[in-house]
Length: 323
Ligand SMILES: [Zn+2]
Image 1 (cartoon, rainbow, N blue to C red):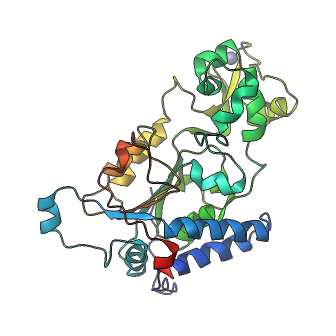
Image 2: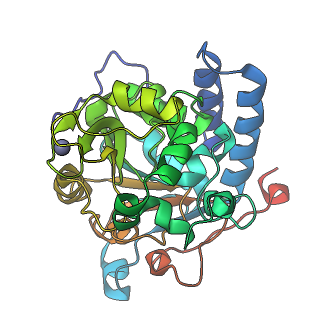
């Protein structure tokens, strides 16, 4: 892992609050020829609204630790995080991204009732919604996944302002890594180099035979998807599956390596667009150093079942408060 220090000739990040960060995201998105300006403006406005409702925290490991350690944040809110970044003390920012990051791109998240991906799978008459991503069911019937893959294969969607925010952090030399639960590839489409992106649930960048393990052409798999066919292995005839992680499969070894290495170095953790329900992703928020500030930006505070939110001091501001 290499880290890039910010050179003295590099302009300092403006010491203003979250509006500057958001403006930078919006400007970055406008420079992308692949992104519709009006869509980006709308998405930026939506994200700004989310940020106004952001929850922010410093990790309160224990009352004793809180008393012993001086606060790194001037205030426990989004402005405090912005000032912390602007002060130059956040040089190893780790981001944890979930499906909410891609909703404004038009990609439905998985669990929102009515509009979530699982809610739209009824047409496949699956025995249970998650079966479409279950390796045992895939062996039995790969067609629902291949039909769904036509919507999921990268290329049909543009990155959102939130993805360009990650690119902005990278351009400033502040991003250590971006862990993502998403399989849409929008982080790299926004310009993040592959070594900065750590997909927790795999990606469409490769494909393998599920029987003999032979690597297969991802382009051939993509062609099969678009032709409404199921790709099979030239060598053994087994089913071929893109390298996204199904239920019943282990998470990528690279994810585990980077999870251990990067979180221990983090000096700021930004959690975006996830309710912190799925493990082991959710528990990663507790693997950062005890004095590492953490910022949660999400549509809601998380479910009652979300154990990952323990320790966050929620600071939900209304738009009126921020004006
Ligand atoms: Zn094979």
